[in-house]
Length: 134
Image (cartoon, rainbow, N blue to C red; front, top):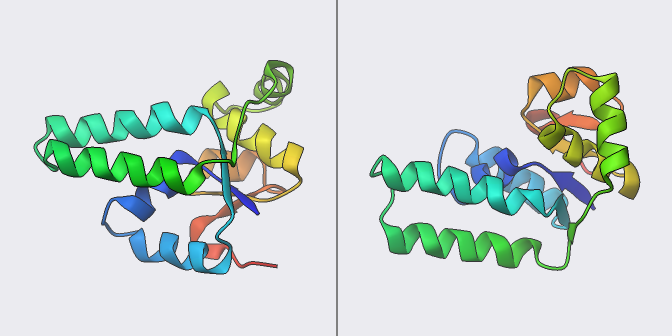
């Protein structure tokens, strides 16, 4: 099991430069987890693509539904105290710290492309390009 942030989920479901890397991570560890927050962030990514005319509505809706199905049963609420303790110790946003807190709670890696998170939490955050299943 690994925790993935919203960007990694988006790279998997929205074809682009990092899709192959996200697919490789999925093939190495298919048990992706995330805080419930990922849903709102992912919907916001999809909203941007819709507004810029990059995806038709029906396609965007199908992608959202498939991504939600993929993570169903492995979405978690994270305690505010844990998140705020990480915020206090780092330059990262509370949003980012929510993913870190979940990875710490589950005692697994957080796969991300966020350089700030990787720098602040090198023990738990693994760059997408460098992830290898144990």
